[in-house]
Amino acid sequence: MPPTRWGDPTHAGPLPDGVRDLVGLVLPLSDTPAAAEVAVPAPHLPAGLIDGLRAVVGEDAVVLDDDLRRRRTRGKSTPDLLRQRAGDLSDAPDVVVRPGSHEDVQALLAYAQEHRIAVVPFGGGTAVTGGLAPDREGFAGVVSLDLGRMRSLVALDPVSSTATLGPGLRGPEAEALLAEHGLMLGHYPQSFEFASIGGFAATRSSGQSSAGYGRFDAMVVGLRVATPSGEVRLGGTAPSNACGPDLRELFLGSEGAFGVITEVTVRVRPLPEVKEYEGWQWPSFAAGADAMRALAQGDLLPTVLRLSDENETAINLARPDAIGGAAASDQGAGGCLMIVGYEGTPSAVAAKKAAVTDALTRLGGSPLGAEPGEAWAAGRYNAPYLRDSLLDVGVLVETLETVTFWSNRERLYTAVKAALEGALGEGTMVLCHISHVYATGCSLYFTVATAGGEQPLERWLKAKAAANDAIVASGASITHHHAVGTDHRGWLTPEIGDVGVAVLRAVKRELDPVGILNPGVLIP
Ligand SMILES: Cc1cc2nc3c(=O)[nH]c(=O)nc-3n(C[C@H](O)[C@H](O)[C@H](O)COP(=O)(O)OP(=O)(O)OC[C@H]3O[C@@H](n4cnc5c(N)ncnc54)[C@H](O)[C@@H]3O)c2cc1C
Image (cartoon, rainbow, N blue to C red):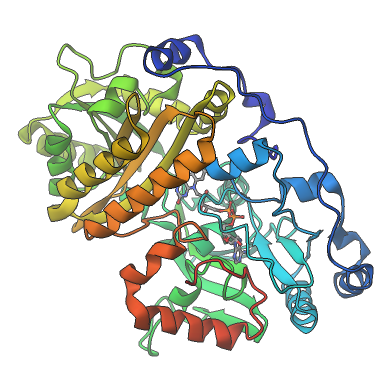
């Protein structure tokens, strides 16, 4: 991906006219191009240590190329993009190391520990909470540990429905390898095309089909991890056991701070024969959310379940290619658009669809047919490109997410909206959807569009802090699936308590005594 933008450059383009007209009604637009490419700072790592790295992992695996170092700088949050666009490359790694095996990673960690070199595992580089921008103070230099060469299907056990995947496989690559065997994983975050298997595990990612297939951490059966203290292999003997606390949980969501995930064994399932997506209209966000709760609590979840609030529905965010056009649910009364998707065998899909249709009709939903669902499915990965086009015209766009129990949903929704609108002022658009549900609660995913102004980064950081404070004050979680990184670290203590933080620190000391792995990420 380009350092200042999202995705495949051939898919990028100017702001579509419909979006420009719509956004221009409420926000000032002004040409705001990214700064011309600036030089990457010269590597701090002494030449002798770079030679040492070459001796450990091989000459070809150590890359000093400026372009690659630029592309391995930070992730893809809006603050990351704003810094890159401003020409700030202060977080650039000194060197990119591309190991080919678990053993290479293990050897690299031993060398880095001995010479106090910070190591930042890099999967797809789609992190949105600062997990790729470690604290470099006190280290000889920073290595970006690019797992992109470790992208094979390591093992397949079709009888047990498990597959062991290399950490560097991107979402589509993993699915293509499994599809050769008639199997699939079913993890489709919006970053699916670029994010990696190791990154999904390290951040506890959750995809758009989480209602049917679960979040990524729930798909993980086993892990192989290289740590500075040695190798850890977990989950290799059985799907579950009673051997004390489940140590897999220590590495799921550890964001590279405890070890480098070098293999991920996941549960796989047969490729669906049928995929059907449709739209439903609800009179209000609350009515749609109540319907989602009823499905989750009635064991009636389809594969995809997503509900946009009134603002998101009016703007068509669930269908980025139609933004600026008439909203799918706009049949006179506005309301809220729900996307419902079914995947599986023809008989399973028919049975689930009949039961869900019956329940949603009884709860007051109005069917909109297949068109909104098919349009959502076709455009589901396109929205991030819009963010770049909006940044190009001075409009700041960013997302944030949280999760809480159903009984707290309304309070949380109101508090976060108020915090964002209060911090960003008039003209700010705050949109929200629910796309991850549980029997006990749901996540809320907010999209914010506002004028960038003179100092868009500072403006956003202030608003984000206000939203985080509102989340904590509302008794909700600081993140459902974006992880902690450096951006949420300051709000982790209220979530897990002082003793919880001490436990994380103790684990870190045991696995990474010198603290070379992603310093400053995750742990307060
Ligand atoms: C436009 C956009 C849409 C997104 N949509 C979603 C979504 O729908 N759902 C969702 O859950 N997230 C989403 N994200 C966030 C992001 O894609 C996820 O956090 C993803 O899991 C990160 O994977 P990655 O391979 O890109 O990891 P990276 O960005 O490379 O790394 C993320 C963190 O994990 C660490 N890490 C990476 N690989 C390893 C490894 N092998 N071992 C140990 N540590 C490792 C890194 O050091 C870093 O701290 C989105 C992000 C963007 C920019």
